[in-house]
View 1 (tube, protein in one colour):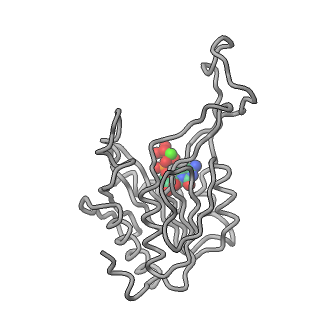
View 2: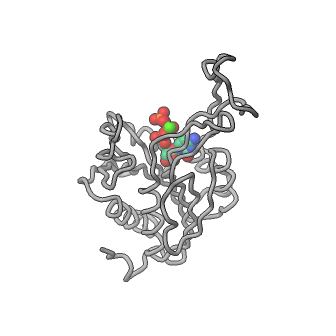
View 3: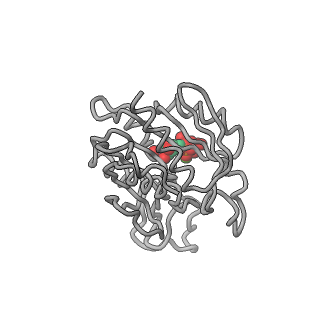
Length: 230
Ligand code: CTP
Ligand code: CA
């Protein structure tokens, strides 16, 4: 399974990748999170390393082992992830695979919130910064190639292109996560082994057949290498 190792198409490149969910604390015992396992982001990090790149993986909380040959920076929250990405720039390529929590608690309670005091019914949320969009608009630190992901439940191709333009990315890989809801969603994309994606670039949107997350990673590395050399 590794057609890339031979010619190392990313040799000499620095690739920064975000992966996993973020955890946004509410109080000492609770947090806001999502179903991301980190599998796709970690698979991409491993594939980039096999392709010869120096890889820095900025990962939210996951239960996966560190990919081989990759520098891993561990973070919990979106704000920590943004700071960590800025810290490890410059890079030639940035791939934003993390399922960043869109909101954090406006204030983190120092003590466990009690039901008797109204509990979380009055929880106030603040929007997190968009890490991808902020890096894509960086004056002097913008990597030459920016790749985003989009988890969608409908209109996958149209949203992929819309996100690519809106966020200033060069490529967006869109996942159809419409079968991920419910208890024991092991068959779904988030947490699962397989993925069906559409790739939006300046040339248009192409839909790839369903394949393993490792195969998606390899194909994406090839598309990135091609784009870099174009
Ligand atoms: N992303 C990010 N920082 C955020 C939110 C998203 O870097 N605060 C990145 C993700 O890593 C992904 C891309 O932006 O590469 C798209 O994430 P997604 O959640 O699909 O897009 P949103 O803009 O948050 O839109 P929505 O969740 O409303 O669909
Ligand atoms: Ca989001």
